[in-house]
Image (tube, rainbow, N blue to C red; front, side, top):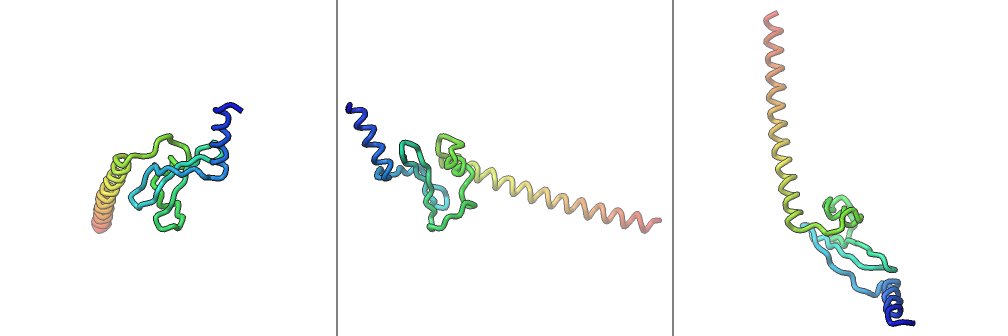
Amino acid sequence: MSGRTAVHHFKNLLDRFNLRSKELVGQDKLSNRYYKHYFEGKEKRTIEFYDGVPNPRIIPVQWSSWLGFRRDDAPSILELEQEEYRQEAIKVKSKKLEEEDKKLRLQEISERDNKDKIY
């Protein structure tokens, strides 16, 4: 057996019994930790929830995409912060639009009532 083949078999043996350590790739705002490791020669991506209770609803979209192999690189802190800022801006705009819509509806109702009083 050549040296390369022996190393390959040894790595596969480590992977098969999950003896290689997992590599911490990142952490989100809630302190969930994201890891990658290799098992039987294939990359696996996992998450350790901050409280130990699995809850997929709290996983940020960027991390979910990384876990599902829909993106190659883990999200950066800057990317996660920008997304959080974008979501907050959407909430503010949405609230403003709802207030404007409510004002318009009240105005329409008032105009309709005034029109009914005239006739």
